[in-house]
Length: 193
Image 1 (tube, rainbow, N blue to C red):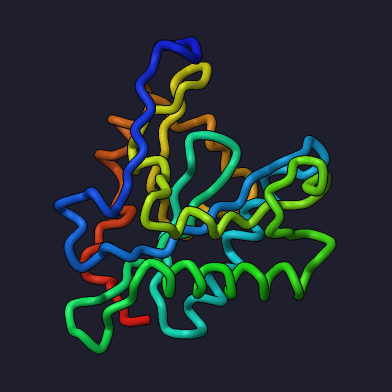
Image 2: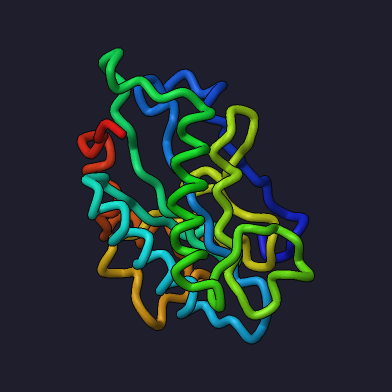
């Protein structure tokens, strides 16, 4: 698959995912490069900043490419006990609060408004994926883009300057997966919110 139209895009909805079980309310945050003047290194910096913020409150974040212009930072939540149970409204409110803090601390770099007109020169922090009926591109899903880029799970050491999400395609990912341990501990990383 070399042209945008030759691929199948897979989006997951955790509400309908029978495998999700206790991970029903994962937190997903997206950082998009929305203008040419905002390079991908700025998106990397945003993801690493969010990682630090999540770790500071005891959560275990993971990162993946979107197969497009952004990164997803995902935190598996433990809802195995009634006291840990988080509903969709709470998960979305938490994601929004985390993104709002980033936007308030650096209004020149981040915003939460999805309007393309307001995004110029800034990174849109998309907390809106944290909704019962919202979808997010699934890990290892090919995208409907030239060369069929793939949403690739990453280790945090890979999330650094020079990361090129176009490197992960349906042709390159099988060999890369044999060499990586990215997300190997995902199922063990669940933490109560």
